[in-house]
Every structure is written in C-alpha cells, then in structure tokens.
Image (cartoon, rainbow, N blue to C red; front, side, top):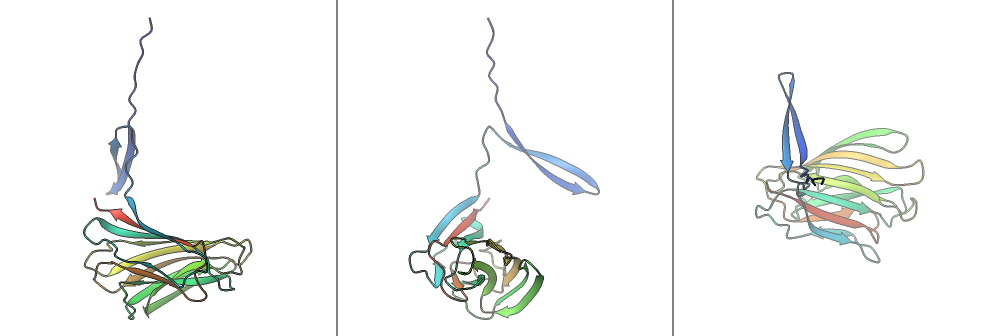
Length: 208
C-alpha cells in the first residue's frame, strides 16, 4: 500500500549586498505565506460631479504608526490643454519653503528645470481636457521620514496618458524646508478644476 507524503513548502526571499568586491546573500523566510504588506490606506478621495479645486487630507496620524507617506493619484483637469500641473502644500504652509528639481519629456524633447524657492511643491501632472477622452494621468509621490524632525524630502513621478504624440512624463525631487511632522496635505491644480472621477489615495508605511 502506497504511503502518502505531506510536503510543507516554505517561501524564501533573498537580500543581496556587496562588501569589498564580494556578494553576500541572506535568506529571509516565512512559512507558506507571503510577507504582510507595509502599505496601509489612510484615505481615498474620488472626485464627484463638477470637479474640485482642492483635495485635502487632514488629520494625518503622526503618533508613531507610520514612518513614510505615499500619495497615488489618477487625475484629469477640466482645462482645455494637454496637461495641467498639480501642487501640494504641507500643513497649510504656503510660505516659500519648497524647492525642487525635475526632468521631463513631452514626446519630442527632454527638459530639466529647478526652483529653489516656491510656495508649493509642484510638477506632477493631470491630463488636460484636450487629451484622449476618459484618460487620466498617473502619479506617485513618496515622502520618507514624513514624521521626523528633519526637512522633508519628496520624490515624484508622473505620466500624462494620451493617444497622440503630445504626452508628458516626468520625475521630480523636492524638499519642504520644515521640521514639523506632516499632518495635512492640500493638493491644488494650476488651471481649471480637478475633474470628476479623479482619485487620490494616501498610504502610510507601517513602522517596523
């Protein structure tokens, strides 16, 4: 009579690092399960009929639950253009405490720009209303150490979706020169309104 064997599978994940020209590997494992995600949804906004000029995340938890913040958005503007620029203000601070450096391409040329002093952190995009109907730009903003006592660095990437040559993609690094923990984010647009069905989702990265 054949014996039945029971197998237990364990997933392995490897970390690799280099030291003095040699590579080292270390296995990180968990029994039969994929490691729990560290992303926790704080809040999502879906823009309703008529659009809006501002999206606000208020009362962001700062009590040691999270270390970093991630904003993901799918955005379109009511303005008749290829794209419009979104901007973010932290903690209602509209002073000239924001700076950034960015690079972008528009389907034919590549350009870079910088701003050492600004009243908001800009240069992530929404599709303009002249682009292909029902298409939305995709963007992500990552804020490490969002609740620490140092200045807040930010990285952004975004792309305007369009069934045409004229498209926009960009990457941007920014700095908010303020040591306060981030407890509020206001997202604005430079022309028109943020259109219906645009979505903005804010995630916290769980503290280890």
